[in-house]
Length: 119
Image 1: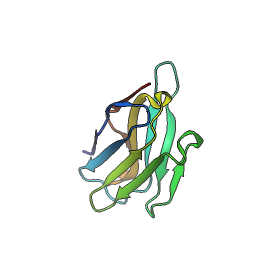
Image 2: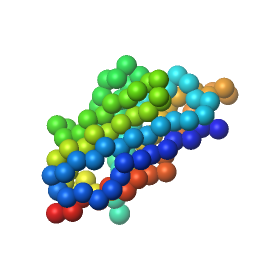
Image 3: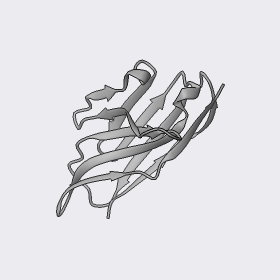
Image 4: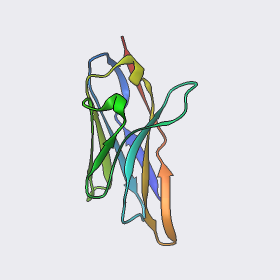
């Protein structure tokens, strides 16, 4: 059984910062892509940032220069440092992890953490 546990969301004023964390627990190995997605009411879930096993990042244009994704492979944890937050960043943020379990490939989602940016 693999679980993804997120933390770090909250309420912040525009221009502020938050750091999200997502840790994978259980019998997962060979984690490849770790990513963060977000979804706001009435909108589709969208990719915010992702990072490969060799720590090569990819960002949505809307967050480039403001957000930084990183990972700690030993801790099976991915982070999202969010700076210069804007009201339009308000959403539920979900982590997504691709890896392997004993029976084959595995892909799963965290429970989501709310980020609210006030103007």
